[in-house]
Image (tube, rainbow, N blue to C red; front, top):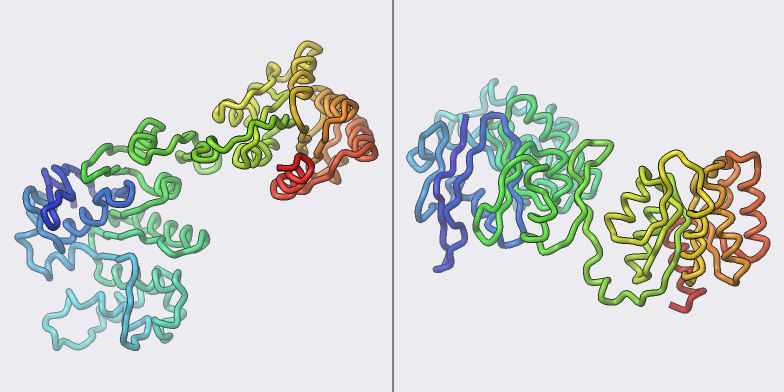
Length: 418
């Protein structure tokens, strides 16, 4: 069934909340309604539920306006999962899900049928909630309750599932559990329309995004089409990096530094890294107000991409080449300009051994040197023990061993008096 929103506007207490919204949701589509707080997402969803009456425009399902349908017909068409479901009475999980069968009852006094019992059990097994069907709903965890409410919605046997922030109040495990379930239901033929806040979560699961701002539909399309840097900075007022997640192939949105920039004290810290090992240190330094630089890094390296994205000075070398004498001198210049040097746990081969030599030169000039995960050097030494020898020499001469970003930030601040 196709859902169409045509020129819909809605006002509350004289204020226009939705402004001429037109949107089409195809059959078996997974739509994420996105936008900042106050943009009109939940209000639009409530208009689609027929809970609110638009002052102009309409919501249609297969060209039929929903305001012409009976409540029972709507309940058999739409199922709703609210943000929270506070129940004051003592219902079991099974009884909660059975409430989803009310739209199918012949009358209010109708007793539970075999079809009802089967629909409830199927819904609870589908959501992995049958195991606690006899437990009190109020005794369940947040994630368990949310799965029960989704089971109740499925027991209605709807065509379209409407959800208002289905992962709110859930930890990351609960969020992924709920979103995985919704994706499976969508793949099995259920149309899903969900209000969401988490851009990366929406990008990973939603096939289509409708981005609202100040009551208007600003952009719609695939996550790749909608979640552009221009759209994000214009609507959310946050400068971001947008790239593809190599594991999920979905859009990943990374906020750049915002308020911290104004507090940056400008202390230069040079990061000797590569192989993707520099990200945590670079971002940690930036967020702590330092002015990081990096090198020597291959231009195909993810550390290079991150440095470029964050506008961090970086010394580079061409792909698959050893660090040249010229590039080594450029790196040494960055080293000597810095107040401290960080050596990350990068794999050391003939091509980048000079990065460790740069750290040795820095220590010789009295620069503090911090070595990340020094104890793992043997596993990543591909130069016949030379890397281990250089790391051991650095430590014996006063280089500081650190384990992870937090330890690095603490010891760096202590040494530099920040």
